Image (cartoon, helix red, strand yellow):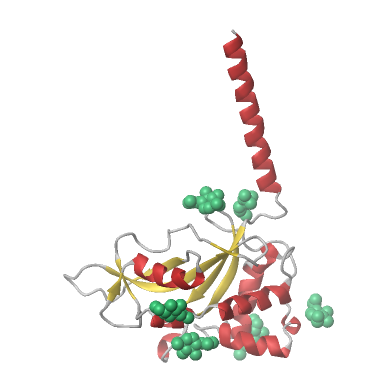
Length: 234
Ligand SMILES: *[C@@H]1O[C@H](CO)[C@@H](O)[C@H](O)[C@H]1NC(C)=O
Ligand SMILES: *[C@@H]1O[C@H](CO)[C@@H](O)[C@H](O)[C@H]1NC(C)=O
Ligand SMILES: *[C@@H]1O[C@H](CO)[C@@H](O)[C@H](O)[C@H]1NC(C)=O
Ligand SMILES: *[C@@H]1O[C@H](CO)[C@@H](O)[C@H](O)[C@H]1NC(C)=O
Ligand SMILES: *[C@@H]1O[C@H](CO)[C@@H](O)[C@H](O)[C@H]1NC(C)=O
Ligand SMILES: *[C@@H]1O[C@H](CO)[C@@H](O)[C@H](O)[C@H]1NC(C)=O
């Protein structure tokens, strides 16, 4: 009987604790837990695109796609939160000219529209931590802190029409420099040669940051590329 009582007490305590944890997490001043900072490889963005970018040679450096407040429990990240809508006049000239380098609208060439879309969809969900100016300043600093194009080149990973890589080859090369595990996102290869091993295209590299967007952390989501399929970087 005493045994039953104590295990019952334990159960109640465990439930209370779990409930408490859930409470802390879900009220943790916002509906996101960490940030995904996503950089894209423009040639992969433009492949199969119906937008103007498929008509000229895309940039050959990784540029920003977005800074996305995210959470682990829900793979669909929060979006279009209640908050201030994008205000172009807040981007002072020096910031604007920086963003034109780091965060161009690769697909359609309307940078302001791209920034507006990313802020309204994602930035509004972390506005309690980063206001619009800080959101764009931090993103540019993140882009500036590591040059992925350079890191890969330095590890002899350069664009090639034929050479393929393992997911871990690319991740290890980046991690060796950043000391944090990045995540990769791939796109299916539209020009898959018949009879050859299936490949996918490296499209985006994700860095993860903590709640305040200051400390880089390991990314642990892996859903961005197919498992066991070699990767083309071209
Ligand atoms: C994750 O995001 C969803 C969608 O916005 C939100 O409902 C949920 O509370 C978030 N979870 C956590 C732990 O913040
Ligand atoms: C946009 O930002 C500018 C500069 O901070 C400010 O003067 C203006 O009132 C803002 N516009 C809106 C609609 O909030
Ligand atoms: C670019 O997008 C902005 C914001 O959506 C819009 O105001 C502007 O007219 C667009 N410019 C062009 C050239 O389409
Ligand atoms: C990043 O590295 C690439 C390849 O080395 C180089 O072409 C590019 O200019 C670098 N970008 C910046 C902003 O330093
Ligand atoms: C370049 O490669 C060397 C040796 O592989 C490595 O020690 C160094 O950290 C790399 N530097 C950058 C900026 O990627
Ligand atoms: C990723 O890490 C977070 C924080 O440590 C953890 O809560 C989550 O369960 C992990 N997700 C996976 C898929 O490992």
